[in-house]
Length: 292
Image (cartoon, rainbow, N blue to C red; front, side, top):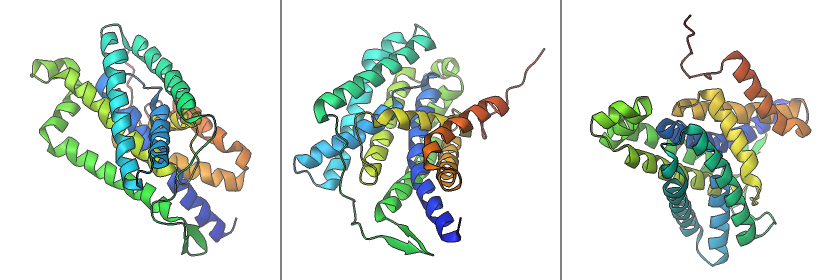
């Protein structure tokens, strides 16, 4: 592999890693609020991209498609939390996880009925003229994907550390019972976490659609890779989710160059299995201490 090829694969991995990072963030936000794994996370990313395509087909400008898609997915996630998750809060974590699995099928079926079976795309935000860097090329949309990921991560950190409600969300993540005793509305934290997850997922879906076509079935693979990234970084740790997403994307891209493109999707699951065997808590997760 030449240096030019290495750089090209690296750029591709950073782009994919940004999307995996945002998807992993969605897993982390919901997990911290409810201790459940939202297996419809990938479908939320898909709904963001497909909603933007639908709005663009109606003549809405790209910026309007972005905002509209975010609004649509936020409404969907809030409705999902109210209808499927909130009634099951006292039924245990397993019941809620099963509800998210059912929701993933509902979202996929609805997307297929609304937008059809064919994959669709969006025009890039700022043109298609590639940018040349040391023998490799970057499409401008890549800068939008990576830049939006960095901005979202920074804003999340400021929100969690500086705002009063952000501190309340962190308190619920550490100990929901103690947070309730301090007067924090746990139900508000849960619905906010779902809404924020929907907004981030929709943003990721809209950003990636001009680069990679989006179809009703695209969410399944995105969700699995996002879960692998969240587990790699440490489920429940937002910074770990971002780190895991970038590591997964880069390793996956380099694996295509070193091994074969046919093994691209398998690499994520090999990494997931290695993490589960060697360090179940993830790279930035707290180690589990066994006491006898």
